[in-house]
Image (cartoon, rainbow, N blue to C red; front, top):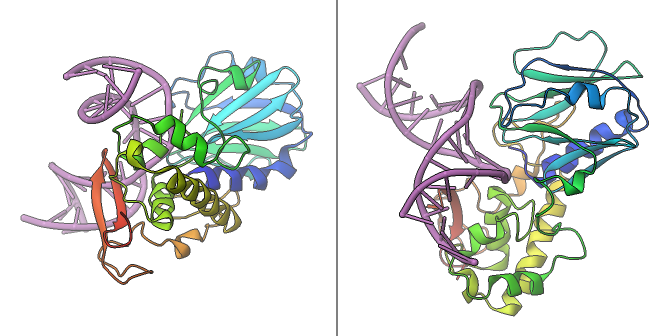
Length: 270
DNA sequence: AAATATACCTGACTGC
DNA sequence: TGCAGTCAGGTATATT
């Protein structure tokens, strides 16, 4: 399941193959993604030169002078670079053929992903109201503390809210809260300023480490070249129900919080 | 306004 | 072996 580290791993993987390439053709085999792909996507994208491959939150941005393709991998999406004339398989929904002959291929079995075109990607409705990048300068403990005052929502769903901070998905939310020693059910408005400083640090730390490890492969995430990430080997709590806490040895607990599996140590996290 | 529920989808897994 | 049922989860949107 792509979270920010998986998307960033993908971005870095495809960047050398895509940057500077002109889009020769676009083939969309299935437009029924999370939102239907616009009818004019092919026309607007074809012929443009991809000057850079960017990322905002978990959206990949293929930037041309005329605008950007905005690709979200959803839960099960992946992109790969394949040689010319590689036959598509059942869930290969979009091909972007480059001047080099390589094809940028989007596969998404569950079709929770999406593909848009925008003249200015950052002004697109899906992007314009997003919170700061967790690895950027605008994100710190003070930001979390200010936004959380008076909020009764549990801290875990709070840090997973896109208008608060982007890119903190279910796995890394549990991990960051463990490292910060904060109970996931604690009300966001009742976490102290100093603990938010610590939490901002652990969010950055866990995301950086996961990017360095090539992402987390839990079920069906693989990088652009089919390579598995290996951050799952470093997970402290996620998916470790009843196994001993790495810090104190107490069994890791699993509860559902806001419809999401949540893992934590009942002794270390308060 | 904030909190919570819903919708989208299919592969992987479970239990019979 | 097969089948029905359950679960997973990102996130915009609808509902409370």
